[in-house]
Amino acid sequence: MTAKKILEQLNIPAQCRRYSLPLWQCPQFLFLIMGLIIIGANLLTYTIGTRFIEDPIIVALIVITLTLILFIIAFIITQGFERLAEANRMKTEFISIVSHQLRSPLSNLKWAIELLMSGRLGEVGEKQTEYFRILKENSARMQELVSDLLTVSRVETSSFSLKKKDFSLIELTEEVMKEFEIFVRSSNIKLDLKFQENLPKVFADSFQIRLVVDNLLDNAIRYITKGGEVKMKIERKNSKIYFEIKDSGVGIPQKDQKHIFQKFFRAENATRYQTQGSGLGLYIAKTIIEKSGGKIGFKSQEGVGSTFWFALPIK
Image (cartoon, rainbow, N blue to C red):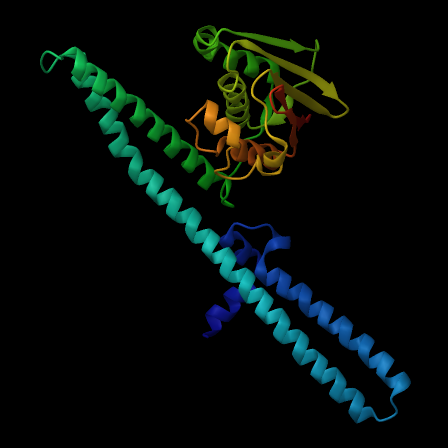
């Protein structure tokens, strides 16, 4: 190993940024902590040994042996963590590269389908229109998946930055609701928003929080089977603004609830009622809220409905 590589390995903050990990999860930092533990264990062993063993050579041998054993264990554990961190970094890079490469051909496919459906290149029969519609729907689903993958790759990297500013969560929610008006009407769902008057503004990235609200509202509507209602509430709780969305949908089975914020996970009953979905939306929402200094959670009962909530700080 060259001197340059050794210096790079010793630069713990740089290594943490490379793996897109917080300091306390970085392999090099963990190795440093283990080194301090080894030193502490050796001092303790030496202190105890000198009290009960008269021969200093035996004490020294015990301390050296213990040091070697602990160092080997620490090295093996750290190497394992480093391999996992490197694999995770490569996976994130792969997702980002592939997603970017897929974006252009999917956009071209979308415009080509719309051009063919318009009839400007020749008359289109009813059967052909039906096939084009299927192609258009599937390309839209692919674009949605690619968009989610790009968002995941961004939020998982250390380069992901939030452009925080003061904004009204009420106004943002009302804007999202307007975008869902057609979807709400076609699904025969009652949508309601209640909020406290004169609420202070939250301090976060409005674009990213919009993604969270959009995702939670989209899920709430999609998983209501035969009409129903979605109730939203915004209020202040101590130094945070609390957002809650409650639906009368299919709910989440108890056995699936511990996995609900994991990547690519979808509850078993969700796939029965709604085949579309990447299983990334809630993972993205959780990551954004936590990076914004907030908290997110839910409660749910299968067959009754779900309530998701998040809390964001006030500046």
